[in-house]
Image 1 (tube, rainbow over the protein chains, first blue to last red):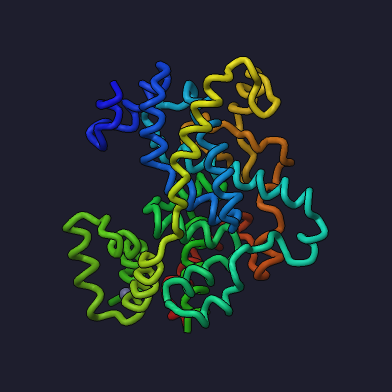
Image 2 (cartoon, rainbow over the protein chains, first blue to last red):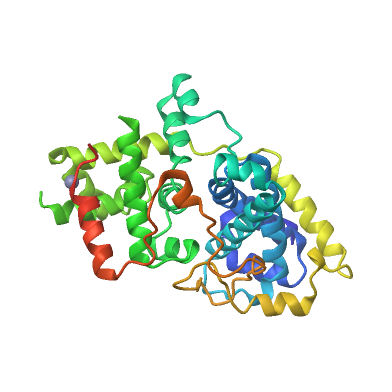
Length: 185
Length: 155
Ligand SMILES: [Zn+2]
């Protein structure tokens, strides 16, 4: 069982989900290995905090696995997990803002734990500069760009995740790309 | 190349840059690029982004798998202080946005439902960069905006 569950992509996510429902912890471990990076990038994009994103991913997996009986095999487990992760990340932000309201009032929606974009721009690479600038965009724009570029999601899937129409997801993406191009000049 | 062509091409640029396009679609994009500085510039940006994806902490897999197993063993203790009945109730709907629910398969568990409807996005957009929300716009207005975004240069 363990060997099969760890047999790589030969075993589909749907099969792993089925095994997980039957109590196979190894199958769930494999789902974590396959999809933790996507979940982390979603959580990181929303929270912009490394430590918070890790906690979010952990909670999202636990909750997803708890709700596995409600998952339908015809949907993508990865997209389903990413949606749960996005909800969890927003909840984490809300909790932080409740605990730290004065800071939120001072600096905006949330403090970014990295150096500011301008500072990062000085130290170097175009790619890290682009990533830092991406973080300065509004959430739906940066999430749309990240989900489209990094995860390859369709605008339909992005719309589901950001809670908008497909058209709005498309506009958020192109607006974000355009803003980035302007900022990168 | 017409503006319509650019709009289509630009939708595919992320998949093209990441090697996710099938051969046929890849050829269409590749044929467009030599004649279009705008699409090339956008591809450049996407490639720059793809060159440095956010680093995923190496310890994350272990952290998550350990937590998952621990939580599965403690079945008698309710997670996060909510009962199984509450979990089931929360799984019925999701209130992420004011205009439409998440409907990937109709059963995404909404553990964030303690948040009030319409508040989940905080005031991020407006506060951070003064951006409008696009969710309230009509399809027609969105199409106009999209047309503008995909037909003009960034500069
Ligand atoms: Zn073009």
